[in-house]
Image (tube, rainbow, N blue to C red; front, side):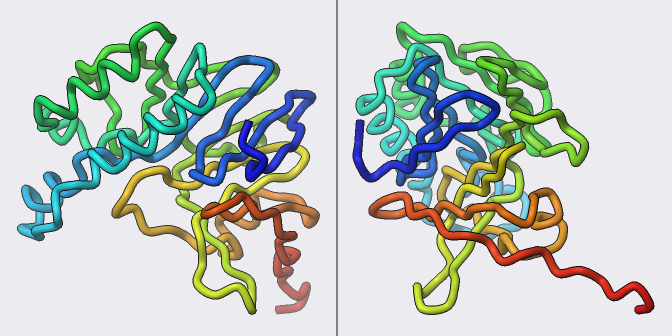
Length: 229
């Protein structure tokens, strides 16, 4: 396995945060990605008349193919918002459909529904709201009172502490939960220090930056409101 990954344990399960933004569970032979947002350029053109280079689907699938070749998983879990909306899922061109079908060959493939792609789509695999494996619960959006072992996406977290340049997509991790970065292109992101996101984690939490290697950095403690404010 790539030595550039970050190794951790969540609720008794060993995980590897890959530099690409994917999660691999070696003991379960499971690869997990979040927020692919495939065909976003099509949706942007259809809904807003904004023309973006239509290569984000190919780029995401190529990166996913590399992670599958690296980890050789028996199962792949996509944590929701895999497509930018249901109509976008129907717009994939023939080559991308063939690539996606090839990636699914010989392994279990689980599509968890997100807020962008709630509903059925015809791209193989199985769909569900939540998925459990090895003491972990996989869902699209974190639940504040979730039991330990929650794995989710949705927020597209990014972080860049002073001195390290621009913010990078990152995993967020503490002893109870893990939030994955967005795996797709054209996805933007939310600063990990924003209260809606930072409040989900204990004071001792990590941002694991993606890029050439997975770099763990302690997150600043959450800002507290003064009692008499």
